[in-house]
Length: 407
Image (tube, rainbow, N blue to C red):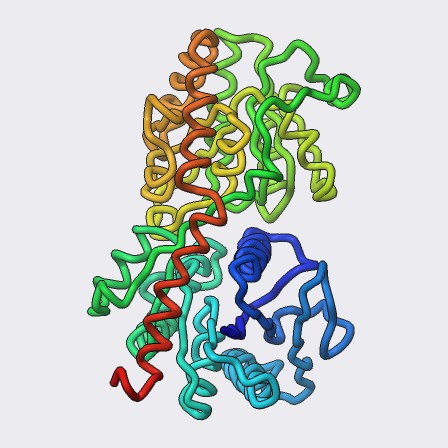
């Protein structure tokens, strides 16, 4: 079986999107399937129309040069039209059995056009709803025409795809709420590669010394600094934590649009010397920072995006047997069992966060049980071989529809 994956962007870029993609492709190949891969014009770093990255061959879509590519709204149509043209060129040459388009919806629309034209089954994978991410980034509002139009386009593709996959129950329930039959939808949850995340990492004492973290209780976050991550709550909780645990420190690894705001907030709260901002670090160095953290904190705010979508970062921490504290948004509740694999606190409540962290820091004797339970959850439910195996039934379903004897 030959699957042609249609992607927004890919490696060598580093993001949760590209890491999930690479894991899917590697595991599908381990199952004996052939995979091909194409990206649209949002993957702007490609130097050629085809390239090999980490053993995977990617077809790239040429960047447009016309006026439409520069005009608001019309430039979105350019994303669709350029990808559809390139996708059809590639599909006619390699003749895939299945098109597997991954959100955002512009990829789905392009793939739907080509699938119908060439009579190829289409699987559409929803990783998040583009319009909800746009709300958090401030580029639209939930009652705007753009938001409603994007949501309508998403529903259009969902109704016409031969099968739908998504990453969590929250998104599945939203899709069902749009009138899509539940038996058309399969959850392929986010997962981790157990070989890349091992239990028992030893802190790098030189790095700890450099960052001023030797002998400290380290509360950490590693990722992108978006507003919905709620990192300001962690900073607001720290003064209260320090009154009980004076050697507590916050380690923030990464960067993003909230970085300057968070640095100013730390100064305003008088805790700038207790919060370490490392900036972005090379991917191959991230593990050194993981090993410094005692408790990973994920204080996401409650909004449609966080209630519906499960994040990847808590799973990476849990795979290492790390202690996790997270807000009780829907995406976290799918991953963390309160009091067993981690702790949940009331979303948006800095006092509840500080109370939870203080309680955990006072109960270090209970940490080994949490470490073991978190790792066990990932080993039994959230590793890539288990997740990717679910595609077998999805692909068999759409291939059966294609076979005239099953019509």
